[in-house]
Structure formats: structure tokens, C-alpha cells
Image 1: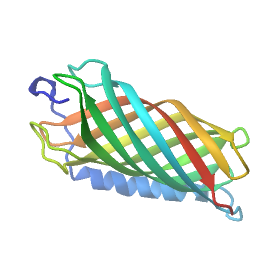
Image 2: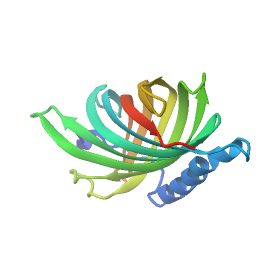
Image 3: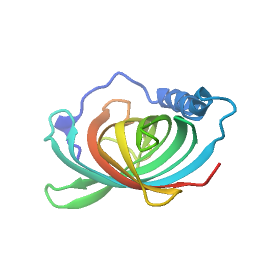
Length: 200
């Protein structure tokens, strides 16, 4: 997936990723406080799978296959919420032969806004991205950052406490290596998941 010609410099440094995660934790876990202090908190646990057929990376084709799964744990208070996200994003190589590579592990926190009687959700997640494989230029466990922006997540209730979620399109910036030569990729993903509300 990486070749010498596709690597370009990026002016960030690896140590900044820890600061990014710290800000994300404050942003994500602090979001429910925006609502009324008297409003009860509802615990949410969700699992999802995602896939990406297109990505933006210097001197690479837009066709770039990735897939993976995630666990989201959060709290909701009225229209606002906060969450922690743990995900694995695997990479598929098609040249010179078909191969599935380990890709990256992402850990982050974020905030949510619920719309339309809780049937639509918007979210932003910030965190760290960990390279899960060796490459020609990089060692496994290199540390960078990721950003996941979801303008519209549609929800359908299967029961009082269980919902199906569909995110038709969301932008994910994955940057597991911040020191030269760097690796940064913008993925356009589609995700589907199952959300369980554990009550107030």
C-alpha cells in the first residue's frame, strides 16, 4: 500500500498525538455536561463494521480498499452525548497480488448531537492512530492521530433499547506516522452498526 513515491513530508510530530487524545477525552466525556445538570444520563454501547473504497493520498489512485470494526461506549443526556471509540482499520492490497494487511488501530473520544427525536446523530471523534504492521519505511506501533467526522448517522429502532445505525458517508483522516517519511490518508467510509441503550 506504501511505496517510496507516495511518501511526503508532513510537519507534525508524534508527541503531539498524546495532546490530541487528551483534548479528545475532555471534548468527548465533557459533552453531556452541555445539557441540563438535572437531566439523567443514558449509557450507550454500540458495535459497527465499516468499509472504504475510496481515499485521498498523494500520488495514489482514489480506489483504495479498507475495512474494519469498532466498539463505541458513551453517555447521552437529552440532545448531547460523549463517547469513547475503539476501532481496527485493515488495508487491502490488490497489487501485485491480493493481500489483507493489519493496517491501524484507532482509539479516540468525541461528542454527539442528536436530532429529530434521537433518530439522527452527528458526531466528531479525535484520537490516536497506531500502525499495526511494518512497512518499507515504518515500524509497527508508530503513533499518530485520527479524526472521524460524521455529519449524519441515521438510526432505526428495533425495540425500545436497540437501534440500527447507518452512516452513508463519513470522512476519516488516518495518520499513524507523523515523523518523516510520514503517512496520511483521508478515507471516505460507509458504516453500519447496532446500538444498545442500557437505560438511565
